[in-house]
Amino acid sequence: MITITNIRYHSLTIDTLTVPPGITSVVGPNGSGKTTLLKLCAGIAIPDAGQIHIDGVSPRETEMGWVNEFPDKNILFSRVSDEIASALRFCHTPCRDTDEAVRRIANTLSIGHLLSREMREISGGEKMLVALAAAVVNSPKLLVLDEYDSHLDTAHCDHMETVIRESGASYVIRCTQQMETAAHSDHLLFVERGMVKYAGTPETVFTSLSGTPFYPLSWRCRV
Amino acid sequence: MAVPGMRLVLDGVTVERGIWSLVACGTFSEGIHLVTGLVGSGKSTLALLMAGLCPPVRGTVVREGIKNMMLSTQFPEFHITGLSVAEECASWGLDTDTVLRSARLEISGNMSPFSLSRGELKRLHFACVLSRQYDLLLLDEPFSSLDCGEKERLCRDLTSRDQGITVVFTHEQSAFPRVDRLWEIAGGELCDLGRVPDSILRWQYAPALIKRLVGAGRCPFNLTMDEIQEAACRMHGYD
Image 1 (cartoon, chains in turn blue, cyan):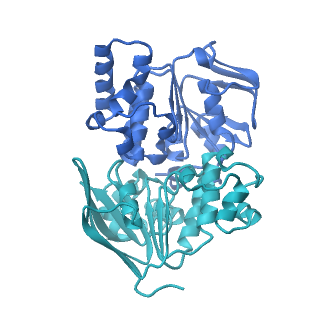
Image 2 (tube, each protein chain N blue to C red):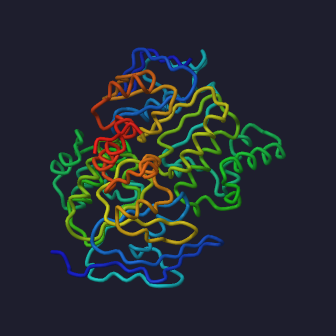
Image 3 (cartoon, chains in turn blue, purple):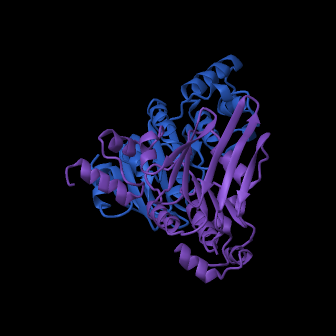
């Protein structure tokens, strides 16, 4: 379990929250604190007060993969293959194992043709696929995805959903503005004005959001 | 004042980068055009081409009767020139309070634009962009980062534009303005699918919900949420 207790950080206030294993989507209005919550869970930000534990361990002691909505902000290397290999090289994985893992994840994400390309040459959506490959290449326990789907087409979103499910990560926390994607999560959090207003299964949370723009269009249409 | 006969013509326009290429032919007349395509197909490149910011290796881009244009890129940060929200609004010649009200942002004009969330920054950006009229408005992934309510508002704002050429490049799955014409990039080529609604039937990479409606023989009359829901009602027998 991810347990969050008495968190105070910027505009975010959470007294108690428990996130079970599986895929958890975080939705809510712009500026409500979704990205802040993701950064705290990832250990990128440290709360002013309170604690977060992932199976009893702090986020910074947990193997974690992070995908920014704007992957340009996190790019370290100029070549795609080097970018994907970065997490493995940082922990001194043997070169042969690293190369094999990079090829495997690139093939899984159907981006093998990009491996020799320069990061600056590829499209925004392709950078997102490379960022996901770099995040999952070392099989993290926690995968944190910040609006990764906002620059992807439907086909790639569907494919990434499979990759995320099969990544082996015990916990996936993702922020999305696609309610159809959120509806396929195991758990859902609705954040508003710095607080988690609703938490539970997509069915229970979306029932509370019935009549708002956040209620999935396919559910409104019942198709 | 609308210019009669305003149109953007892509005449055998070709862009090449190594083994990747994009060929585009077609005429964009007044109204709202939706351009879709898979990741890496060349939507952003096409937007740059139309804006004259990416020279083609072959062919020409002709802007007939187009006196002014705006390209909104997918990353709002690229547009920021002010050190504060107030400076940013002033750079557009706009009053800060008016912009913030229009963007529904409860923030101080003294804040740095970069301290806003991405969605808030995009709202600020669109409040500035849509305060003016353009003969040619190019929007690259306008809905990314916006929350569901803001997507709906932007769709309404775009639908209400009654002049000029608006081209929306997007991967969005459920929020669309009322669209006049559909285009799709596939196999390195821009394809004119035609006017809506007939073109919806030919939309190869349509969102899953629209594909389900079309598959059930209930093609929506257009792509707004109301029209998609109306098609769903017909599907459930509420004709």
